[in-house]
Image 1: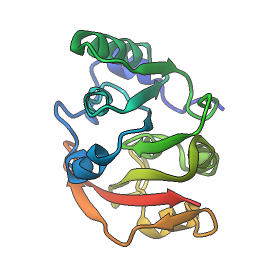
Image 2: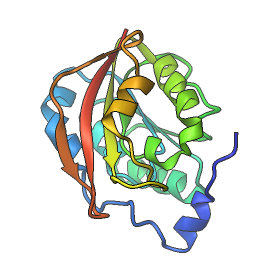
Image 3: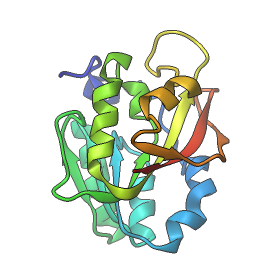
Image 4: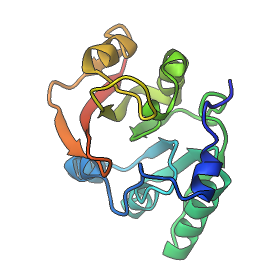
Length: 192
């Protein structure tokens, strides 16, 4: 399935309002957890997010996945400049799979960039990417309006999408501010 937006064209036109120049506050909320026992992590739709380097700095075996040439080149260069090891794969997240299941998926802004018609397939991907007991650290975009991207990831809809038959939800959530003037709802889900 093809993406609904030409993300590379957005990078070339410098219309990337979703980007932060700093670590997502949600990452900092979870930093202690991420620091405890590094393993393997995937960051889908990683763009130019600094979390790819941040996870590598914490000792994680990090893999960023993005479709856009600019994002992939940026992340590979950022890892090289930092003297860190990591992988950046250039693929559509709906058509890619890791060689082995991982411990963590850091879902920052990929879900809200996908057409909601693709969400079920994407949720299946995330489940398949994780080991049993692996964690999905999700920042669900809260736009409060129709249309997108970013698409509104209403909590009840997310609970249906990531259902209790396959996921255990942590009861604690938090709000993370986004540079677009909206916020994200941080949730930890464990793959059953």
